[in-house]
Length: 283
Ligand code: MBD
Ligand code: FE
Image (cartoon, rainbow, N blue to C red):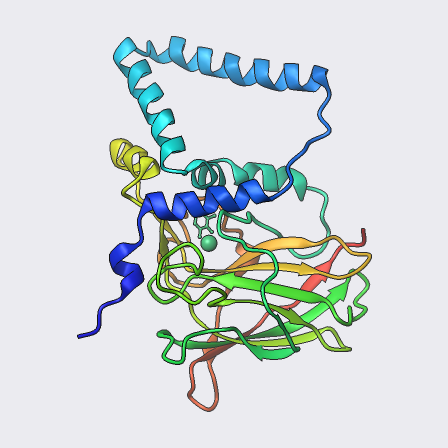
């Protein structure tokens, strides 16, 4: 029997370190005034004080919290923690006024600069990539229905075991990651495989919290996308699969009804296909 290297050796510390390093490569500055920092930090700290009073938090619990926060950093799991439990609200606020396609969270496993591919393309994958073949096709338009020729459809997703390339060992660098350039009519056809549901690492600090609280660690199977075109607002989103596990109880609370696909068997019997169109807001 063949064994899968990534399944055997993926650890919270390794994927956490990779996600932390990747995040630190991104330039992060916010034009936040002193007054606003004061207001935000004061309110967050007060909210914590309020929880301590309402629940009569003990010194043992305070020390357990301190130890856990230190562990989150040591495991490199701040990107994971924040993207699983906080990002969805930031996304809802950021996209509150968007008229076109729905967005959702980016998560910790995006890598910029994936290989550019023509309008009909197969995502980079291993010759024996396990999983049900999936044809994901559609069109990118602006809000009045005009084709956005040359729109970029960046897709990244986990493999059939729930692992992301560059965050688990043993996978080719760009496995299941690509940037598809839409044709003159804004159309794209992406051949890939259906990803598996994703369990966040359970052997790190986030897993400790999940076990201590009696939660589960699952996200439904999902495709990640960034869709962009000049003069239009880039959208970061995810698409899910109707009837799949954890669509109704995503740990990251990032599912929206508009983001659920219902792929049908391909007429030629080779896997499934689904059509999904993107509408980008003007900038
Ligand atoms: C993921 O694959 C993901 O998309 C999010 C948001 C958090 C953890 C893992
Ligand atoms: Fe993901």
